[in-house]
Image (cartoon, rainbow, N blue to C red):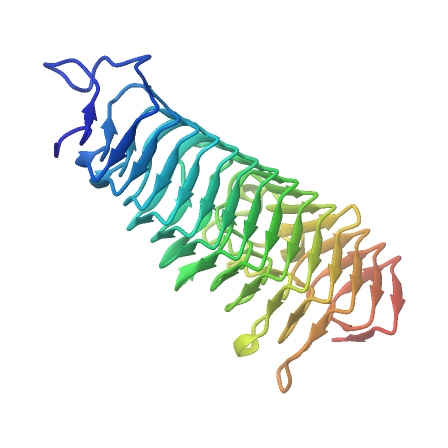
Length: 361
């Protein structure tokens, strides 16, 4: 069926986009079905699929397995995309699926695992403005061209892990543009434009609380996190700084060492800063954020941030022959911080404790 639902199309006979509310499908297997929308099951209403298996299903449009609906306790393996315009997805596993766009578009995703998937733009990328991702695990996924494991605008990501995900030529491995990220772990992810987190949209402040970033790497700077907002044609009134906030987070052994890149842990690469906006105020780190043994060619810890009550220890700048090699921080404002080793380049330092730190610029 190349119209709506390769195996099951839910709706009225004369208008397949109406009807179908509260339809429940349970304990079924869907294999090698095809459709334009919903390779296995399609509707324009919120049906329910529970404890089902989906394998080898294909959609030439949206939703390789499901279009619309809800899924609980299902297994998705070897499909070309899995769901589009989904409402609630819970307790599901997604393994070795592929997609030339986004694998899963769902408003709320809870208690799911995403392993060894291969996509073009993103694993989870909901179109709604306030999505929710909770207690999910993303492991060994590849984002080939542009995107991340999770793409969310003004949404919430809580208690999730992102491990060993990789992004390609325009990619960022884990999360982009989330409104709030809480109690998450980002480990061993790698991407060209940010190993763990990329924020590039001006709007709701992205707040990251009690998260751990360890062993992430970026080929173009910002091993753990990167802010890349273009403020062209904006005024100071348009910019509600800070744009990115870290609260009680740990950054350990992240890196951005290739090609003279900056920001082993955090890089502020925002551009066209309007008059009246302080560059370093766009990113704020506070409440005992710790930067430990991060590395980069320059600014191994942070570049372009305001750090309040933070700890910098053993960050190593590996560049040489360039303008600067800030080990702990560069182009930043440090207030009531504890810095050990490394060096600071063109930083404002206020009420800090400094141990064996060289200040330059």
